[in-house]
Length: 392
Length: 215
Image (tube, rainbow over all chains, first blue to last red; front, top):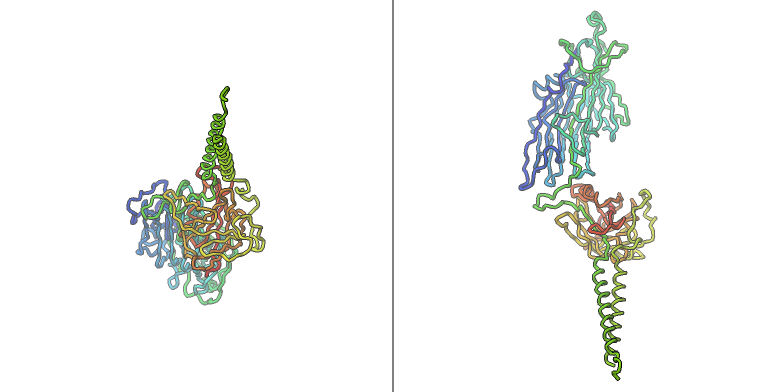
């Protein structure tokens, strides 16, 4: 099978940016659209190569008044339309399952965003068992209550990887350490020209937590602020596509007997985390290679190197699952909750321990003044009692 | 003769008034004594064993571990204060306690599912050192106990010690005192340089503790 990858301008990707007004709290002033507190939430985004096509699902932007913008449940996959498939290629599909993807401006004007879903990465070229990678109970969340206390978390209940015909559970990456899974039975997102027919195609997949706003796949309208925090899962796929060395050899080459059996090999991992379950290996019921060929066009970023089987082209695909961010201006102070009060919701000034002398000062000064008055009166009285000259 | 007695009486009153005035003023200076205005510690905060307690300087701290009265907080060195529930002013100021033996209580209830229970006490008052002065010597791992009005004993373990300039408090307030996060006990007092005005001391000492035992 051969696949080709079409270079598409990033601008051709889906750029819908939802900012639906939420249920605004009455009488509360809207925040500044350009500089105010803001949060974004995106279900899934996919980019093929450095200059290849990309698809970014509808990003939810927090409303300008308190409320929530939430992704509709009708969005079930990314890509989800013919246009999106044209941009990202026909083979990769990210299933979202039942999801909750929302960006909120709280009553306190604190922006938050959350993306919760069961992400399934499918290679549709694998007809019988397309799911290669699955995050069960994935959740990414950011909260921006104050410029000095932004928080972002990325978690998942389980990570499943196709191994030997079955999905097996592997240990999630620890902290900011990436987890690399090697030789997964995953082909490229598009057909690659000059690919050797019948050769086994595998991918190395690196999974990590997003820690930087720049790691997100974003539309242009998705902005940061004076302070910003981001979260989400990043999946980088490097697909190794064997290239046909010579047309005659490709034509004459018999189908490799290892092409299917290699799929039963356990996925290698690198980094600090290793697989926690390696049982369940079995025969692969499908294959990534179908012998399909398509006209070659421009290719995505590729790195060629020589292996025993001939030249290999690497196709790099980057996926962000549950990309979220929130941002604040540097002088942001959370407002009170929606109870009509205008002051802060938490103490912003605690004067306990102030000098106590203020209360004593008036008493002390008063007593001193009284002493002076009494003293003066005593002097006056004493002087008046003295007899004048010749009085006696 | 009668005027002599009157003059003598007035003189006595004058002396008494002057002495009283001097005593009142000197016992309650606007600028607290240096020992009552602790500076931020220069040594890095390190976990201390519960046994490594220092002698208490708090005037209200009992010398021995007497039974803790209901409705009070007791700090690691024994400083004890009665809890008085108060709410914020319109500008977000936490009202100060009425005296050394009180601590303002704001926010979450004891053992709440979420949010900070904030207790604020004087570092000093009327030139006397307050029980919360010991927050300047607090270390991670030490225990703070609160006995509720029903006599239930709640034990918290100090997890974080922080000194903030009062100008910076607003920027950290939601994280420190917010009612959304996990439940914790937050103890606050003042210290650092005395700058007068509405700020008094220029710093806040903030000690956060997690719940480790409930009634």
